[in-house]
Image (cartoon, rainbow, N blue to C red; front, side, top):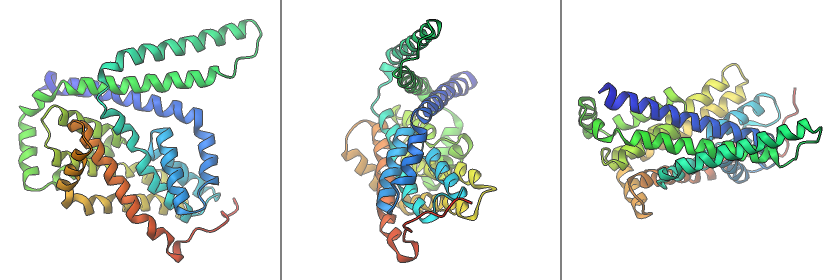
Amino acid sequence: MLTAIVLPAAFGFAVFMLGMKLMEAALHRAAGRWLQAAIERFTRTPLHGLLTGAAASAVLQSSTAVTVIAIGMVNAGVMAFPRTIGIVLGTNIGTCLTTELIGLDLDRLAGPLLLLALAGWLLTALLGEMSSSAGLRRQRWLRPLRSASLVLGGFALILSGIAVMKSIGDAVQNSLFFHWFMDRSGDSLLWGLLAGAALTAAVHSSAAVIGMAMTLAASGVLPMELGVAIVLGANVGTCLTAVLASIGGTRAGAKVAWFHVALNAGGALLFLPFTGWLAAASAWFGGGPASQLAHAQTLFNVLCSLIVLPLCYIPRLRIPNKSPAPK
């Protein structure tokens, strides 16, 4: 079991997480300041906040990063709590881009993409060094090219990690723990939700846990409804990072984090009895089992956000025209 499951799974997961963090850091460095300014400017209404949060999460490839930015802005007094509601709704939608890309089954492109990213990074390093040696100003296009190369390299590592984790499908299916887990899940899909939440809280990445579920589904090991339950749980577990980020901050910042928890946990419990419906609806969009889990993630987050969005226009939660002045 150690050599057949644990070591390959740990190695594949480590490569996957390395790719995620590399891509997130490169995107944040390239667009972080611009996105923070956009979040502050384009969140006058809940709908605008939703669209801005979705776009920012899609660019940064991390709903948690955008939520933490919003918490920081509330703690600093440059944004009121009600304006963050739409942002949180949008982050859940924007983060689905990662799983949808993983579901395209692009594993075979991991090697060429990694080589292309390495070539781009070496080119920027060489040209930057030549410019410094010659006493010339560095070209403005070098930094965007370097960031793009790092993003591409991170995505290639994600695909490589997925490919490694796919190799353990047969061994997992034959393991005693998996049979025990499947027996428990047969009694209640709540086991799948709890497993997804616990794993995501431990690794601080819903995309990583959903990616693991997608690899098992693609191998034919994981039933679709159980996979959907794990996806619902992953959306709950990802809230932990935002809650931790709010500790020691203002009361308004804590409200942002706990609204995120209420949205995802409430949505997961609401949709858990309808996992069969989510699985059938995601199958209607086509693709293999992995793609269908990605579609289920997208459907869940879009529906939850659209259900809650009208509630944001209740007068008591109406967005003020001006943010409070920084203290």
